[in-house]
Length: 455
Image (cartoon, rainbow, N blue to C red; front, top):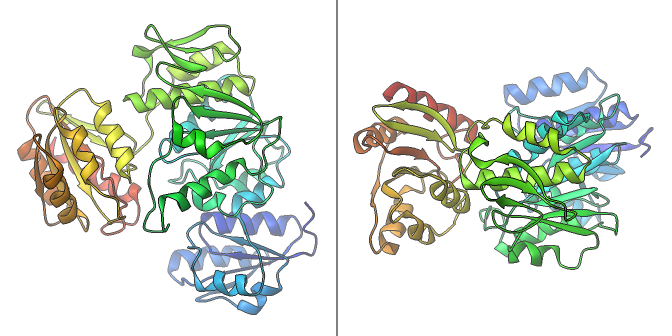
């Protein structure tokens, strides 16, 4: 793609917007960036971009200047009904997401990973397995949390990596045009982001855009037996491979993580030696192993990489233990499917902490996994009252469910009083964090500090 003297507009000065602007100006573009925010962090990023010769506007958007741009890149945090996007749509202007821009400059091969849960763990694990097998691999995209850069930063690398492994959110997939992974992955599907999407179908439709530009050379890695994912893929061209605990091209065979994508059995690692906690992480590991194998990684490198994997922050992460109680930070679990998976993955009685910003999901269906696994539920935050009410209404038997008013300090103190030796206190909120925190990372760090103090 040639951006020499092309007018490029970037909307939003978050990490992805900054990366897109840097890439565009390095490629010769005449770049304009705008953001409605004016806080110190945004102002500092704006100053850095101005030093590169980029035109930066804070506190609003020059709509006419945006409309004059030949290429418009939007940040994923801008909702589709934002006034600036409505204005551009009325002018007949189209825009693309930041990973769409980045992918136009990649010279190596591309792996793209989407789904509702497990995206970040799988993305970073694929990258880890490829590196363990001797490939020059780089991970990025929607990973966030400082764990990997935006997609456009990877496009600025010189030399380019052999493989780019991108996590793709539904927000980013919504605005792709030519984006085509060599290997595409859907980890799973369940309702999410209903505070932004009008329906589950609309959310799934954006996920499905990963298949838009598929051809016969495409390879797809999908969960075995998942009808929602199978329906999402439809009749998209390309070869399909499946992973699951007991079926597929990557599975558990007699207690061993095993591959046989081409019919030949390739044992990798005993399940007991896989360091990540929970059955869902076994699935993430099987998925990542299959992807790495399709990318050309050798069996030995994959086995070594699986054995050296480490838990990611805020994802079923053990953070403290004392008085026989294990404290686990799963702050990244921002929907009910993730919380359900976390609860089902643990083999000790659970004191479950849920709550946060209300995203509109019905808490009632969570009740069926609580019985026999969870001793108590502490519901807190903006969604706490509704969560407690709906769980109490849905359960026939099972744990006590209490609403805890106040701060995370109050919630952790209550959990410390409720938990007994042998329990796990699990922060798996099933909600986003924005009622009390800047991000799920902020929430997880605060919980971790409190848990260490009481443990």
